[in-house]
Length: 484
Ligand code: NAD
Image 1: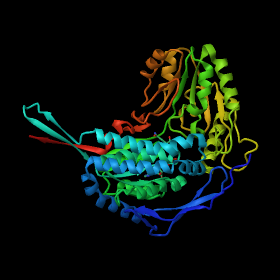
Image 2: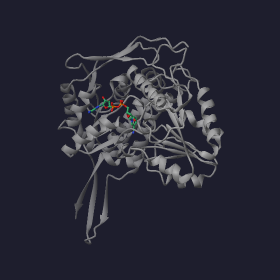
Image 3: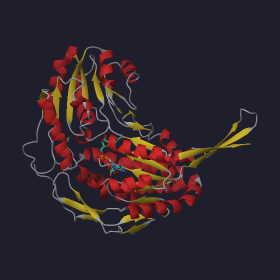
Image 4: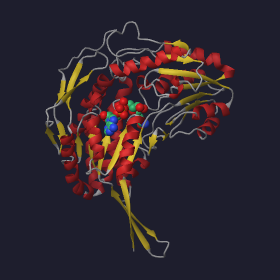
């Protein structure tokens, strides 16, 4: 395979975006962003020091009173202008993000390209339709005004796997609610985060309303603890989420945590296997398996077990692995060498545990550059195995047999996580009855796709709180009751 050559000059973004201006990091620090498919330097992004984070929080605090006081209609108009600027950049943003993290372009166009502008427009529209206060009859016979106030300065911390969507899921409702934001994106995908700054400047968002400070864990931890921050919104690993939750607990600081997952796909005995396998890549191997809600555990009925295993094996073997910028690619490279090594170590765990390898298991022969791992499937995996319990975050699936619905539900729920899941069945009512028994924040019947108008988030170790939908606005509001 030939990976896409770098046709543009390296993208360098040596400055932070603070108070509507480009400001060099106090120590001049930059971090290289490496292209996942070529292992070449794609560009360098500024790396914020704690002192830079202080500046960004100060700017957000200064901008807060005026932004909070801006009438909802005016804020919505500015958000629409911001959405239009993001949309105008959608195609190039999608390409840039795919080059950073290896996401197949067919997926990236939607989730990195167009989704952010859709989310901003969605919350602008919701803002126009929402009350900023309501007056209720009081239980004491008089009236109470309930004001919906912005929570204040938001620290938004995001991972590399869906860098644009996951940032927009926080920025859009926060700005709509009248909050100001400091975004700390992941160093692996810092370059695409600057698109939000370019769009904010072009749309005329007031200075300091949105600030962007790429950096590592130290910058993130400093931001979470900062006394000028009123709320933290985090997406990332369960380990980091737990650490952030502990700090926020100590500080009594509101926090939203979108964390890891290990979701199950239940193939019912009446499933249309062609339909199931035609969705396998997008549901179970989506974004090269680097997806929190990927259904990486497949539960197959004993009555059709061999048939399901064969169908999965031939489907996965036929997937196109390669250049993420090629529209026909199903599986691209993993984000970093470390991530590739971690996933390969899990494949070795599967082999040594004696699971039956039915697809993949190594690096595709013709892909010696880029962090590729062949989509891999192990069958006959007991749900207690490490491979079925731990989040691999790569293209590695397990197949586990079950006897009846009760056992399928019990296996699906036997996980520390609770984020997504699917059921594949000819009977939608049966599918909904299974969905009602699964302990997760989201679930798909015969497909799985996030709905911007519905809440997304997890239970158990998959996190706290919800993003998207009207429910995604509430964490950025605080309610004040004025008793008359
Ligand atoms: P990560 O937790 O290592 O890092 C995520 C972000 O948090 C990065 O910006 C990082 O710099 C920052 N960070 C790390 N430790 C921190 C700390 N102690 N304080 C403050 N900031 C800190 O995660 P990752 O490897 O970038 O992303 C992969 C993980 O994200 C997976 O576990 C995946 O399941 C999860 N994820 C969850 C969702 C969801 O919505 N539930 C979505 C996407 C990814």
